[in-house]
Length: 62
Image (cartoon, rainbow, N blue to C red; front, top):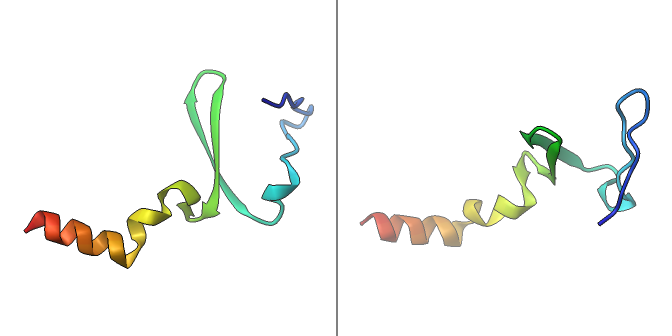
């Protein structure tokens, strides 16, 4: 776990691996933020948008 200080302008510096990427920031509760990197679709959810997954879902629906 890393501890980062929020600046007086409410900014934080993210690790270099996030440089140039889009991120979504979701407030889960008071004092809890979740940051996900990706391009409109969070990286952790991209599998749901693949052809293989779509075919599995269609087969399940039948």
